[in-house]
Length: 160
Image (cartoon, one colour):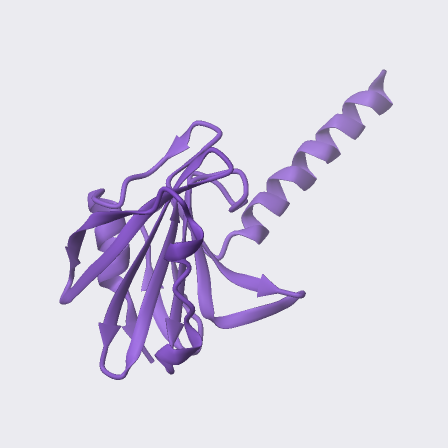
């Protein structure tokens, strides 16, 4: 019985530690840009084929797993021609009202993907392009493009 309690305690400790290791915290410098978020958001660099992307971060609401929680995928393209607009791929894509965040005007559209509400917004900065893809609801976790904390996160974006 004691061994079982010790194992449960160790497992709880390990889970607690991995919870803090996985999250990048409330601010991050990717080497390309800086971003800040409030305490209930987690910032992580996006990995593609196991490699961290310096121009891409997930900002996840109330969790650390972008596939399980509402989130924003923010990408900065120094060369906007690298961005492929996927709007025509979605049958239900519809224009969304633009949002102002800081000194940027974000324009985009909403759509559905596998039963989840999504949105994609872009904003120009100099010769570059910001892209923010929103997963608006996942397993009860919800965000809105117009939320004050979403706007604060978008306004915090600063190029290095």
